[in-house]
Length: 577
Image (cartoon, rainbow, N blue to C red; front, side, top):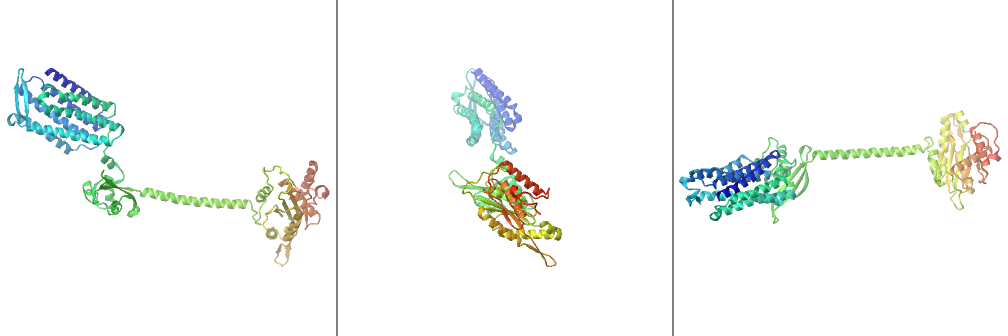
């Protein structure tokens, strides 16, 4: 039976050793790999020594081998605790190492003194042929066994709790780790409790084959060494936000480094450590926000601002067990937000100024700066809209019966050049301004524009040809009432000639309507000035006649000749003085 036991133990040792090599090659991934490698080495030693102890050896040799064998057992159990401790994100401290070293040292001491004290083994006998060792366990052994099983159970419970909180791959890892620890521990308990029936069977080393296979699968298939759960405390310690954990009475139970930094900045004179923070109170500035769940903004001296969030921590039964207070310094963010809001206000003011300037520019672009009347650019859209023109410069359809008529009155001040030559352009400008004022008043809300130097145009929408001449005469008389008083007490007055044309009776387009009004103005000039002349209705002249009329009018306006233009041919008078 001894060769079978030895072969089984060596098989288990080979599996765990191979897993240790596999994990050791990845030890650069962190402390988890190092702790697992050492654990597997301890289990390998356990299996090898278990196989050697199964050989028929002298009793003295077996008693000597008991010391390294049970030390390998103690160290394997302690290394399980270290592995779970490291995997949960906690550091391995000297205190932990010292505590875990006590039990192996006591076991070694008990085994060395056992031949005299009989603490570990109550009795050791050799029976049969070949001789077989029969052990009767003493109190020391049972203390060692219960202690070891308790450590393994505690480590397994920690792994199980971590598994329950985990998801995905980490949850599957937790399942494998629980199996890797429960299987050999359970088999070891059975082999010890029922030692009489299992004394010749290497059950525990055989169970370690399962442990080695499980760790191999977890390492290769599930990235055991890369995917390591991080403890909440470790995450909280790395946060830049200040975190306090409060008990039910409002006392500080724990605080992260950022909280200590904040407290030290609020309390000049020194930095607080964790022990000083635990058991104390919240900073006075945060006592109010920390009393109830919610979010508040706390203003600190020096212009600092904290965004403080308080959350209740409750047990599964709903009972309040504490509170968590998280404070974030939002001074920089709020300052940047205020600066951005101020910049937006300035930008809105600039945009409003630009819009005002643009509107003013549009008004100035469409307004005559001297008289305040519309200029050509300002009146053209109104005229074309009145005639419902669709394309700039395109033909205008002939108005049908019942369409709203549009009349244009084109006025020209008589002998205005003489006023400028005799009295100066200042007097001429003043006279033109007074004419514009009176004409606007007489137009009764109809658009009035300065069409050219001393030419003024009034757009009369809805005024038919039958009443257009009477309205134009009223406008002409209004212009005649304008005057400028000179320093010597004399007054300079002006008279005006007016040409009238109505759409659709006299023209078919905006351009032609202005041309016919210009023809009427020339007729008024030719008839003696200071009067109104209407363009005759459009009788459908042939194109050649219309072109001749326009050419003759162009020659008269350009002043290329002093000859009289035939009024019957082009309906205009002589060149306008």
